[in-house]
Image (cartoon, helix red, strand yellow):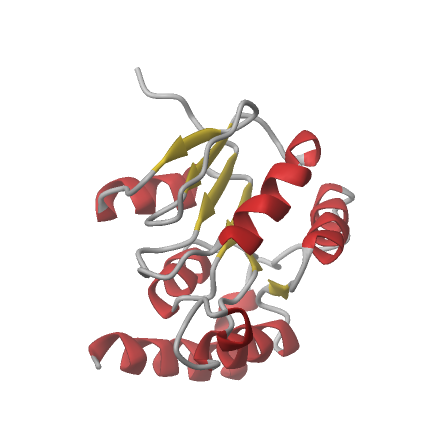
Length: 166
């Protein structure tokens, strides 16, 4: 029987390394609900504290998102859409061009928009990640039962769907 991971971390399948997110998660590992699964993609990553896998199937990704108590994700449109559709409030660390993690700042724009709409928490570094984890654990952040019914959510959901069709 497969483990039920309480924290799921995913950096997507981008070819550029995303060590910034993985190193921040490793540094905060003791704060996270256990067990933790990290999908590290093309970025070399080994941990004694966390379970690590390179890639997961879409079915497994959806299952991990639904079962997790905490999600830490890159700000890829597909990952974010699955998290929000599952009623989750993910922590997003967007890949950034300034760190050579992606070709432009579209993930920063998406994460910022979702953060402003209170659908996600955008973080940029280890300290911000630690603060976000603590806020979730202290139940300072919760999605209300009808949070996915707001006009802002419908606009965001529509824009994400458009991005996925491109």
